Amino acid sequence: MKAKLRGHHLICLNFFRGEGYSDDFVRNIYEVLKKEKVEILAGPDEICLECPYLKDGKCANNEYSDDLILAQDREALRLLDFMPGMIVDWKMIAERLPDILDEWKAQFCSGCKYKKICFKT
Image (cartoon, rainbow, N blue to C red; front, side, top):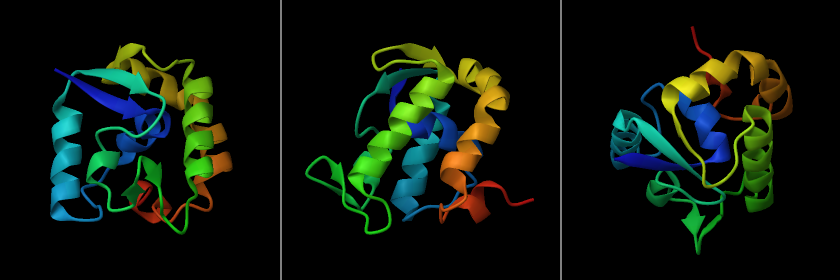
């Protein structure tokens, strides 16, 4: 079975530390991470389906506009050199992270409220 994920989740899920909006949301992420293959989507994915901010297929979070989320997705795919429709595995994603992580952090992590969760030591 394969996960279906949008661009920025390909990066951000590598830093998942068991925290989220609800227990159901967290359980869903663990189930997604168990899947060996990932089909890349251009919009809402398996993680978004459990998110309380997904409304009518768009992110309705007050802190992050749908346009920002879509821009993150496009940039993640550009940095990872992936395209929607591709099927990859977690190892392929992890191998590409070291080369792109500094640029990703500079663009998107500094203002992200999850930064303290992703990069806690």
